[in-house]
Length: 91
Image (cartoon, rainbow, N blue to C red; front, side, top):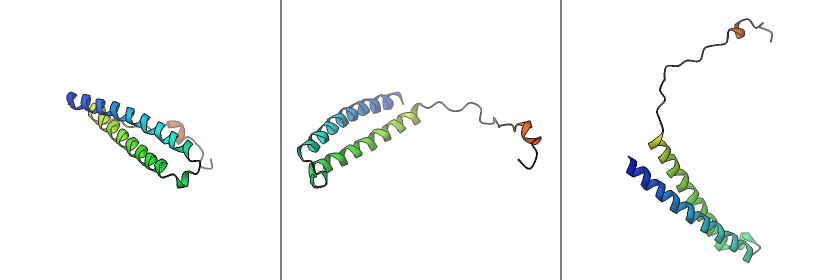
C-alpha cells in the first residue's frame, strides 16, 4: 500500500509539472491569435489541460482513499436539542 501511494505521488508531481507547461503553452497560443474561436492550437491545449486536471483529481482521490483513516465511532447519534420541544407551534 505504501509503495502504491509513493508511486501515485510521483505521478502526481509529474502531471502537475506537465500541467504548468501546458498552461504556459495555452497562454502563448492565446497571445498569437486574438480570436480564440478560430485558434485550433488554443483549443487543443485547453482540452489537454482539462484532461490533465481530471487525471490529477483522480489521483488525489485515490491517494485519499488509500491513506484515509476510518471513522472510529460509527454509532454516535446526534441528540435533539431540548429547547426545540419547548418551542411554541406557531414559530
